[in-house]
View (cartoon, one colour):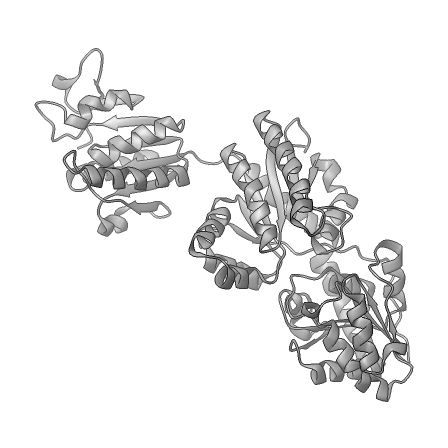
Length: 508
């Protein structure tokens, strides 16, 4: 695209001005020039809690995307998704893109996605999650361990690891002694470990009575104030609310240690920002945090919910300026190597180029068992280099398909088995819908005839090759195949007719 053309990348996520990691990532993309280079159109699908507010934001965004899809103005859809409602909302945008034949990228940000899938989704919900992941041109995750987890959920998903981007300040912050200031950035709620941090504060103040804790974020500030008062540390706690931009940069410059004691995380932007700024980090070993901190070599890791361990980790850094300096330097070097905005954007753009690259034509080859299958496999070398999928009635034929080809099994049925034909038609509809072939080829029998009928309705080209066993006359399906086949062939010259079928040789 140049990445510009009348067909653009459409990105879907929360409102850019909303607090949170997904918005921060999208803002970083825009500020680094990605939106300008690719002509990105950004759609907000979420602007805050509340069903009516969510619908009032999502439905107009979906309508805009649908209109652009119908007008052929969308080259690629990129959705930023967490879990639960965020995923369900974004999956609708993915489905719209899929229906229009436009590739989409799912960008997963939630550290709770695996738990959401296994513990909170119904059987139908899990099926839908797998489908959305499987049909994506790419699924972006934030850390290597997530790639393994998503691959376990849907092995056919095209998973890529692309970290969150962070701007690298030109100069790292100097390490001060004595250390006096802790910084927390994020939502003030239990899942973020805010109350664990408050519980650790009395032990910290015993050794460092002048310590100050800045809890910068939105959420239940009243609950935080009550907890701080109950613990006798209210005088040490600052609550400036959510901060970003210059205010956040200023707090990072004032901080001696950043603390993030979350119970769940993605790849938190505040950790990356602290690493880039040269601020030592104490965080819990959840989500992508161990990846960011190189398993503790670039910051202190503690178990989630372990208040004594949290206090000890902070005390060690406060007591040892040399250790703080060592961790800060290692963290900044790692941020420059892995998370710098330029490097991350190169990976995002490579993902988009791959998603937009021409794909080999998908060919679906269908046959029943026995001789029909043998003839079909003889045809397979003619389609070398294409994206192949096979459909037949015998599971033990799987070892006979070329490497890399997909294999589907359906039930066999005859014209006397009406219920069996209905089941067979449903199975083939699902396979054709999933594979979306550009070409369907069959060597005969009921599975092949039904597959051609379905595929042709969905816009695929179709080829019927009547079995070589039909020497004296065409099979019953072969007689009717001219209605559903773009190319209608017999393997016997004596059976060819001016109005079809044609004969162009034999398979055997």
